[in-house]
Image 1 (tube, rainbow over the protein chains, first blue to last red):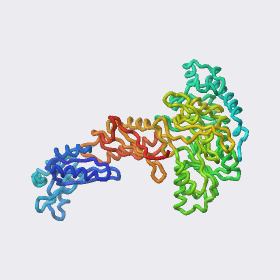
Image 2 (tube, chains in turn yellow, orange):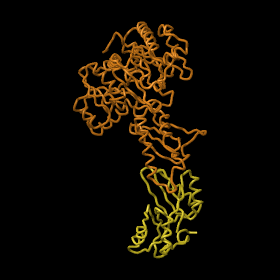
Image 3 (cartoon, chains in turn purple, cyan):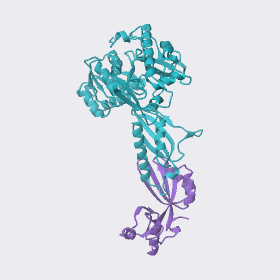
Image 4 (tube, helix red, strand yellow):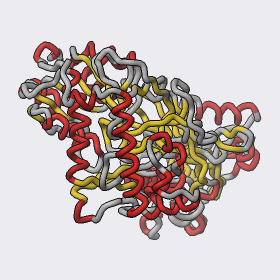
Length: 143
Length: 437
């Protein structure tokens, strides 16, 4: 399933991450997945949220750069080799994984992942073809 | 009291004025003949060289500015043929372009003489070993102190700046008795000496420090940590280099070598000469230089003068330590930095990736200047899927451009759009947290 991801630019200063999450909390927005990449100076926060459009406005109001982009959310079998089997599909189809991170899992026996591919639409099409595009919004978002 | 040239240094005021007048008349004649910029300004004021009969006419002469050095870059203000110029020095100007000054052989000798007067005064002799830890190169510091120390016959260690552990080792091994560097570097040397526990291995007696502002507290700290007596030296390359004015043993301000340099304090707004003792902008006229004479050069340094008789016997006027600037120039680790230079670099950064909104933050941490430049990114700079590498690449590119323009490293921070504080719509460009006055 294609989902909207928020990327937030953070200066590495005390309290910046708190400010963002606090503002989201006040508006009752649920965080389903979060990944933080950082250097000594900067951080980029990636978020999967229950209401991305509203969240974007809230974060933007803090004076922070926030952007939206499309990523894939997938459910992988939570068994040894599940990840490798899953990645093989992309590998066989010439798709690169830019980054991926784990999502709160609400599907029994499955690990939920957020995957950024070199071509999101193509990735989704392949998953559909293989019957692996198996998620509903309620599996990810607490609504 | 040791003098290098007692006759000149203690010359009675009237006699000194006569000498200055003669030299001023000659300088004006020479500049009018050979320096286009000066001639134009004189003509604009309907002034002829013969209107200047002595130092009482000094106030009639047109001012000159740092900008002139840029407009006539590189050699347009030189008053002699290039075949007679034996050396050039350069420093950063108000924008990317350097400013260039030149010296004839006689100029270098005069410069060495000015610096040597200071060495002699504080008691340095041909038995001393002088470690010059000012930078050697286009900067005037290293070569200036070097020549002065040689002139009095001292042994010179031309260390140049940097490599602190080697500096200290050399100081110990070569038994240096005098150290010359920037005051902030002296503080750092002192700390390192203390950390290494080698203070008792030092042979140092005196230190000569300049090229950046420093306080009496810093003086005490340097004196304690290196077990020396610390003296202040003033100068700027446009006028000559270090040694335009120097402290004597009584440390009651710095004697301006008036046989070579005429000094005035003016109101920076109106240009009017201010009465003695009042604080204003320091203006120099060189009357004994050949290659690069300056007439009423606006230093933008704010300070005051006093003519009171000094216990050392010298009759030359005393300038107090400059307390600030009448422009926005910052002195960071001894290097002149103008905010406009930073703006220029940022404007050149391609595309609309950053805004020309920036903020300079200068502080002094552990006695070394810190220099940070915050730059606002534009909203459109970041891709929809923000990549930290793009940000780092931009930061690196700006850092490199700043270094090559300013000649000094700055820590660049990219910050969120519109995050730099604005007061009444205008961004506050400089935050200088150093408390040096």
